[in-house]
Each structure stands twice: as C-alpha cells, then as structure tokens.
Amino acid sequence: QVQLVESGGGLVKPGGSLRLSCAASGFTFSDYYMTWIRQAPGKGLEWVSYMSSSRSDINYADSVGGRFTISRDNAKNSLYLQMISLRAEDTAVYYCARGSYRWYDYWGQGTLVTVSS
Amino acid sequence: QSALTQPASVSGSPGQSITISCTGTSSDVGGYNYVSWYQQHPGKAPKLMIYDVSNRPSGVSNRFSGSKSGNTASLTISGVQAEDEADYYCSSYTSRNTVLFGGGTQLTVL
Image: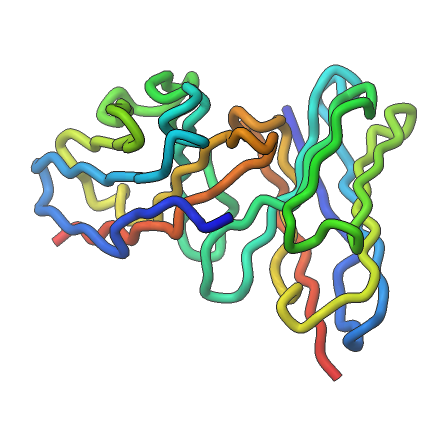
C-alpha cells in the first residue's frame, strides 16, 4: 500500500534552516510528480511546491520562492524540502503528497515545523 | 495570489443535500478543468474526494459529486451523513503553473 512518511520537523529560530524528508513506499516513486503542502495551526491548506518525476518541472508558491528548495532522490524513493531564512509565518504542518497540480491522491501524516525564538 | 473563495461554514441535517462553492477567476478555476476537492477530519491528513472537477476516486462514496460553471466549482454531498462532518477544501491549477487552495469550509451535520 502507498505510504508517505515525513520527517525532519522541529523547533527552529527565525532565520534558521531545516530540511524535511518524505520517504515513499508502495508505488513506483520515479513515475510520479510529488508535492509539498503546508497547513498553519488552525488554518487552511497552502500549496508550497511541486517537482516532476524527472525534476524538469518545478514550481514554488510566491511565499516561499527563493527560500525553499524542493528536491528528490528517485533511487532512495525520497522527496526533500530545504528551508532557509525561516519566518514565524512558516510555522505549519508540512505534508508530502503524491501528485502534481491536478490532484493529490495520497498524503503523509505531516511533520510540524515551528519557527519561534 | 489570493486563496480561492469558499464559505466558511455550511450545515445540513442527515439525509439532506449540501453544496459547497469554490470561486476563483478565469486564471484558475475558470481556465482549467483541474479542480479537486479534499475532506479533512480533525487531526488527520486530507483525503481526495473529487479530481478534475467531477471525477470520483475509487472508494469515495457516490454521494459526493463535483461540477463547475464559469469561475465557480461546487462540491455536492447528497444525503449527508454524520461521518461527513469535516473540513472541505477545493484546489485549482493556475495560469502561473501554481496551485491555489480554497480557505476551507467546515461542514456541520445537525
């Protein structure tokens, strides 16, 4: 069965950095676009970034462009999100999801990132 | 870019039909048939309910249906049940090759 497991979240100071990981299993990872979506506490969903299977198609939300970098290792069935210059408003649960810009059919359980001094 | 516009809350009695709207612009909802809908129960990850405006994934009840007219997409739940009480989000592809979500709608089953 499809599984997505995020890790790497935690407490970080404003201006700090963090790298999230998403381990995928149960499907051919290298065949799919993958996406990061976040949800601030008590708020709605916000799309962050997607990457195609071949890494040729990448896009970011304006709110994270220039600070976040999405990447993947198809040999390790893993998706990553490198986050720098973190701000309080980046505090959220970060979900890894299978899919591009059309739909997201599988989601991980999320990892919480808290940006606070 | 601003989020797609959804009503903050809707409610209905068991067995009734309810509709949740999702309004965007011609650059997103109106311009592409790439609207999807998600159900989220408290503390859980979202679940795909509708994709490409009106398609239902395998395993999703046929009580859930989607449609679109102009810049507004809609999710209809026919014969709402207690287990349907959750938050619902729409999303759409945009002309900037990005994705927008709606602000979310809380469904209360009375």
